[in-house]
Amino acid sequence: MPPFTPLERLRAFGNQLVEIHLWLREELARLREGVGDPGVRPRDLRAHCLAFCATLTRHHTGEDAGAFRVLAERVPELAPVLRELEADHHMVADALRRVEELVDGTAPPDEVRAELDTLAALLETHFRYEEKKLVRALNALTEGSTEGLLGVPLPPQDG
Image (cartoon, rainbow, N blue to C red; front, top):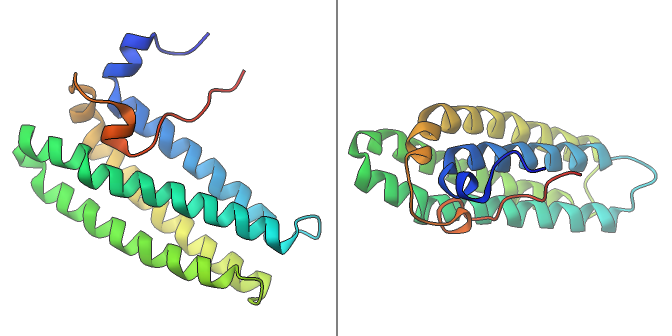
């Protein structure tokens, strides 16, 4: 049984943001585990990395164009926070570009792992701050869609 009814899931955009962040954390952890693993081919690692990078980019550009615009209009006191978060998105995009350059198969695994560790630390700080500052305001929204506000659909549920 899903943790939310369809109506609750529709309205609890802040909770959905947390779900998306949890899923992204898990995907990044899986990606990090694959670096240097002899059972993971460099081509598979690159494909996983590119898929993760594309999803994270879509999430952040979706937030910038969706949730952040709506919140700026409805909760103007969040404007400084939203500007900080958008600036974070640019830093994350730069880190993603560095990771993509490294996983082309020529960088040593320890260098790729170090860049992924940097990305993970940056994302953890970003996600925590975003959740702390936006969940309540997002949960107050009653219109929109998860993909329209947060850039990506909810991840599949286990079980």
